[in-house]
Length: 183
Image (cartoon, rainbow, N blue to C red; front, side):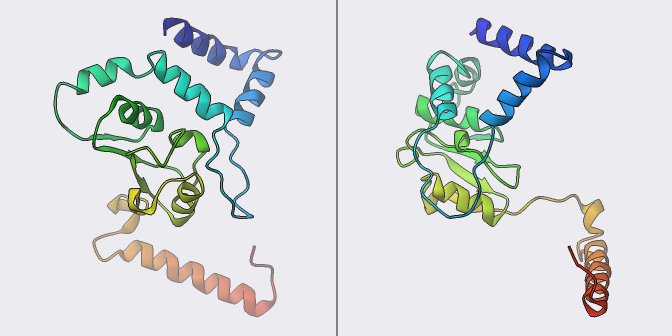
């Protein structure tokens, strides 16, 4: 496992290198690429990234964390998919994964999603649909919305949010009425 961690360190140190950095990060971008949302289709088949994560977990990725938390019978709540998948593979009964982005890569779901017990908190409908396409059952997807701090909302009546919405709606209506492009 130390070898893997050292490889990752070297990889990220190479980012600033003009010859090595761009090809490495181009490769990373292709590994993390999320397929087009449309057309809707079954995306539950395993990918290279899913197989790689599974292999890393089998080689000990997350082992220390799992040993530490296995001493107590508590649910595992994480915002990192690898931790959730590792805990699920280890046999933890209650594993929850909080998705923090507006989309998710296939690697964020277990190799055999229909056998997994991970429950996902999806911030938006697109993530929920993507999880379904990856093979996660509806019973394990909980649509939560994005949590926003009160400073952005104004107060419990959402005064700032409503004011911004009214202003943006007014601007959009003015553009539509004047024939301007609204995009």
